[in-house]
Image 1 (spheres, helix red, strand yellow):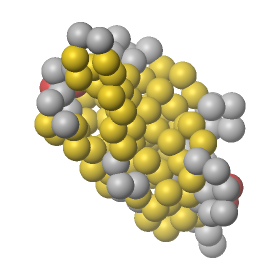
Image 2 (tube, helix red, strand yellow):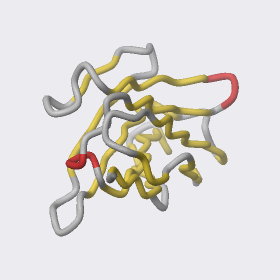
Image 3 (cartoon, helix red, strand yellow):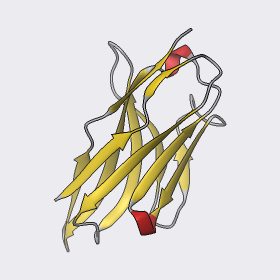
Image 4 (cartoon, one colour):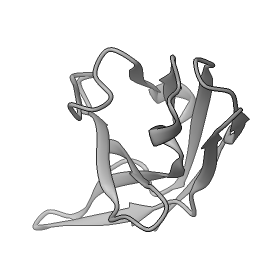
Length: 120
């Protein structure tokens, strides 16, 4: 099993910045890819960004240029730096991990989420 715990959310004014953290623990030897998702109020959950084991990153179109995903493998941490925050970034942000749990299977794990609210 893998446990993921997000932190760093809060209330921020438009144009502000924030860094979210995701602490991973448990059986991490099979950790492959980590991602950030978010669920805006009354909307479906959407993918935000991905970072692979080798450090390659990809981003959703709505966050490109403003969000930066990173990973500290030694500390079992993942981060999401968010700049120029917009009201539409208001959402619960979730940490997600793909973990190889056996030679033939990959399991998915989610954190509990951290709230980011962007408002004056």
